[in-house]
Image (cartoon, rainbow, N blue to C red; front, side, top):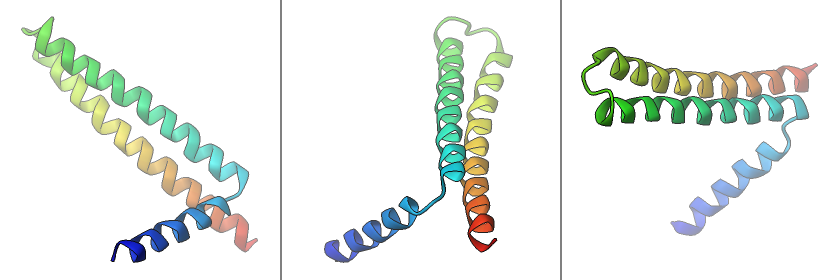
Length: 90
């Protein structure tokens, strides 16, 4: 079972290595943007719980930033894969 899962992971890694340069850049910078926004949102929530405990808008803003970061990551990955698919067909 473990060996079968490793083969599947290796197959996925091989397919990702075949992605064109533009798609890799889109996914790469989308991931960097996700990390930056996620950390910003987490720090905002942490500040709400420790320093700015009285302002409820700070907590809302932090959760909104975290949710948006996941949306940006999904859009970057899906967009990069779609662009790769379109350029491979053309």
